[in-house]
Length: 256
Image 1 (cartoon, rainbow, N blue to C red):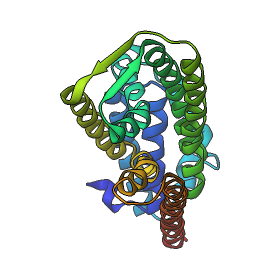
Image 2: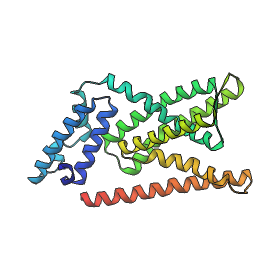
Image 3: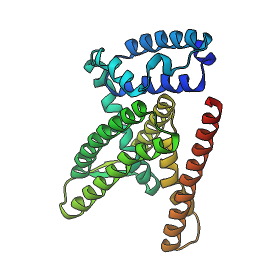
Image 4: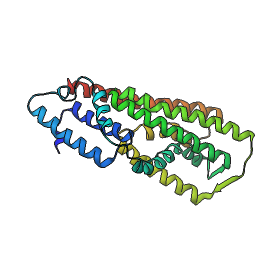
């Protein structure tokens, strides 16, 4: 492929452009055509000794926004993605509950989860557009993409608080139903992470829930498990950040 022959900076720009156009609601087929055309143009320019800055100008952000403004928003195709992304945002709660046992939710909690998931979806799309068009570093990208996750979790805490006060009918999914839902969510997370080319979602899920799951098999008391779990969570996220910083530094050295 031509892209394999491009510079690291050009490859990153093309990846960011794809994400920006997708998160802006553009048609996948049109995105592919435009990026392939630009890819060939960049390859030809680099073969002639030109840099990407001479092609897209001093502001990649403005270049992306210009391309986006010339494309129509594909609402029909986006209607297929919205439910998937909303379901993905619900995975934080569902995986945590699966560790405790079968899934069983009140009607209010289900409705509240859908509402916070919609807000999460909007936050993630905004974060991806910001990250893509501003060409931020990997470490900054991690924090920006982590923000809607944290905010949505805070909103869900509010849902849990209200749910504990106002009782509504319960819906029990049973053992089989619970594990089927968990398996479907796992498949979605893997596919979503591959498309987005970032491990932020699985890393955050593992950091939040894996320590709790493993410590549940120990003889530690509840307080010790909680403290240890929080410590491991911070360590896992810290290691991931360290890895991303090293990777980003290495890429910059290659570009320079």
